[in-house]
Image (tube, rainbow, N blue to C red):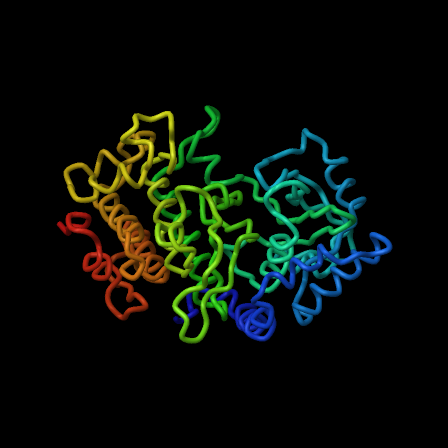
Length: 411
C-alpha cells in the first residue's frame, strides 16, 4: 500500500518497519518475554536492570521509552492519589500524573517542540497493572516493545515504564477526552453527545491506526482487542489506539493465520477466532465493524438491560441490514436526526461488510479507511475526485460490490 497518507510519519515508519522486520520477528514466541518473570534475582535493582537490558536488546537500540522508578511515579501521581484516578478495569488502574524535567527522548516521543534548557511539566497517564489481574509480565513486555517500535498518529505514545520489584507500570501521553466509550456508551449527563461528523472522524482515525498495524508493520501486528474503551481521544477528539498487551504478530510467508488461545472481549471477537483460535487481520476488521456499529447506533455490543432480542447488537442489526427502510431505526437517537441520510446508509454498509461471518469476504482495513475518507470528503462537499482503494477500484464501488443486499443504494 502507498504510505502517502502518512507523509508526516514517513521517516519514522521506514525506521519502524525495519525495526520490526529485524527485531521482533526474531522474537515471535512471546514465551521468551514471559520468561523474565521466572528468573530469580538477588535484588530488585538487578531484576530491573536485567529487564531494561533485555528490552533494549530485543529492540536493537530502537526503544525510546524512559525507565521510571516506582518513587518517580509515586511523586507524579501524588502517591497514586484516588483523586487522580481516571479509569480502572481488569488490567488495573490509570492515574493522571505530572512529570517534570523532560529530556530529549521524552520530548521527541510526545512530538513536542520544547526547549531543553527549562523545566517543563507534562500530563501523563500512569497505568498501574494489577499484580493479580489479567495483564501479566508477557503482556506488559509486549506492550513496551510494540509501542516503542511502532509510531503513528493514531497509536498512543508510550512515554516509559516501571518494573521495580513486582510493580508493572506503563506511562502514556495523557488523552484529555478519555475513551470513546466515555462519550458514546453509558454517557454521563454532563457530556454532550458526539455529533455525526465527529463520530465519522473517530472511526476513520481508529481504522487508520489498524491499517498501520496491518500494512505498514512487517510482520503485520494483529491488535486483538479493538473496542470502544481502548480508543482514546485527545482534546480535538482525534483517536488513538491503546492497550497493546494482547497484540500478536500476524502470519508470515505462506501461512494464512496464527493459532493462539482465544483472548479479547466478549462480543468483539470474530466468530472464526472465537471458535478455532485462528487469528488473522480480518479478525480485527470484524472487531472494527462491531465498534463502528456502536458508533452509529449508540448501543453497547452486549446490553442485558435491553429486551432479549436486542441484547446482542450484531444479532439485532443483521436482519435490519437487509431492509433499507429500517436503516433510520439504527441511528443513535441522541443524534436527533442530525445526520446525512445517505451517509448513514453508506456507514451501515461499511459496518455490514466488516461484520460478515466469513472472514475472507470482509474488506481489508485499507479499503475501509478509503471508504470512510470518501464519506468524510463527501460530507464536506468534496466528492469530485473519487479516491481509489488499494484494490484499484473506486472506494464506493468496493463497498457497493461487497456489501450485503440492501445495505447500499445510490440515489
